[in-house]
Image (cartoon, rainbow, N blue to C red; front, side, top):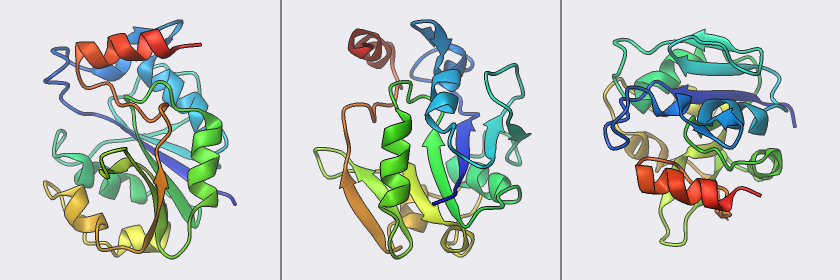
Length: 180
């Protein structure tokens, strides 16, 4: 199934205590570059964040106002989506693999598919959706992704260990230790 990818890379990185955690490196690449490799099967990749040099050909956009949160970021990106299916990924998931993304896309039934961690928590920023369902989900700037997406009909897929977002220095250390 053809899909476009939306990568969120414009957060404030407060817990990481840096201006932009997606620029941090593990192994030989930035967190953002690693995520872009994971979504390399996308027809189009839209990155919401400050433009910079990356390993892939991407469309850059920003939410208004910058820093308004993930829901606003997804709204801004949807203006650039052409495919019927959209993969949403946080730019701080450096262990994500193309096979993980393909599993999400293949799991789309009803409105979409979302990875769910061992505690039953939906990873809204590691999910795949029918573009029309996202456009009609009620996403609003400053609003909650959970509030907008929880009511959609999504296949819940157990998250592999590679669905690890790096929010803190300890998370980054854990990801480095998990690199092959």
